[in-house]
Image (cartoon, rainbow, N blue to C red; front, side, top):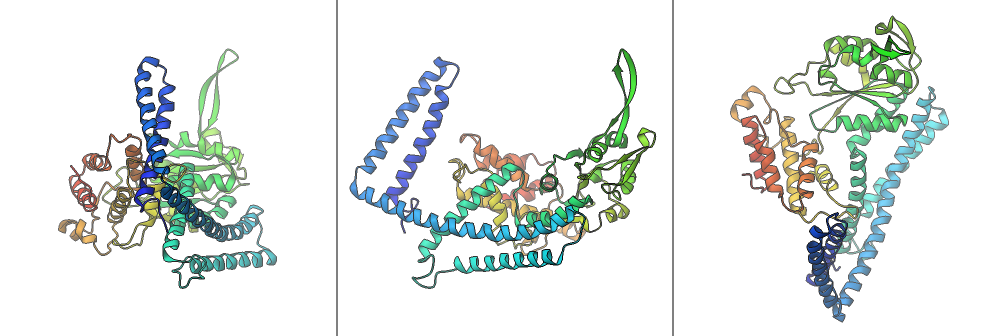
Length: 490
């Protein structure tokens, strides 16, 4: 099967076409410049570049053999795309069946009732159908055993799988821009926690820094209720009165009056919206004591507001508390207090540990979720990488991020000892103490490179990241991990 990457003529034609597209965008920007004098020379340069590229494209296409090759490649590519779309639809259908089963449960929860026998049977049927569809999909994309296999040759199979990967990447790009890449781990937590949010029960998301706990809480809150949540950060000099409410002086009718102003927590109760307590273990102890009681309240219950003379407030439906907290370790996250057992128990079965992507994989395995995150953060709407970042660089950056995340989390798999000093190993401390190439850090670094128009390389951006690490031993370990993936750390 012909490929626009493997065949030299097709590769050049693709390069010329892509470069011409880039120049056209630059030309349009130059024409839109406010200063005509400053933009005139640039316009002429871009027009000359575009003309040269179009001339080269016409030269390539003037050869009949090249036209035949292009026609054949496009025909084969179209056939691969049709198969890829069919497979992707089957993949999404299997996921949709599972979501329909979850939806049956969610409707019952929203109505504060148990599932009927018919609903239980229907949900079971949907989940079985989803499992059958998933198994059929695995068989369909397996290694072709004969010419009558749905995909055919192994070469065609590779092309189809590449096209499926491109479709997945486009979907991941959309999800990331919506705020959350919905990996299998995230989908599992969303499916299980949504009924709790609908019931107004509290949810606690625990995990290491940069693992998308807040993004998950925001997605959960919005998808379950359709409302924008109140967001309260635990850092800063926040007080219990600020969270619940306080009296303020206001001008009214020429006089100064005292009026009670609800805080974000009370506003969420009154309006029937979720509230996110971000980094709850950084919140003041006085508030956490009050929170013990508040976590027991549900929509329909009454809260007597101490800050407002004990006046009662009936909690509206739609209210729920979603809290995030970093892992409790003695060596990091300064300023965080250990959550009391009493407080954690208030969340009951609503506590979920949010792991870094690819958690549980061996160090030598391909980090699929980190790689998907990395690619989705920089590809364009067509699923194409920017010219400043190669697929190889992206893969190596994803591997470096994966290893750093596992070392930071203390995942003692094979290869872990390469990054842990003897002293730390004896003390039972992780190989990285304060800094990690977390998912959000990886995305920020790749964005910086992609937006630099080629002025910043990935090697340089990663070097800057390592250089900014304050902890000397962490700096050494991160440099070792990143350079181990072939990057030049200066």
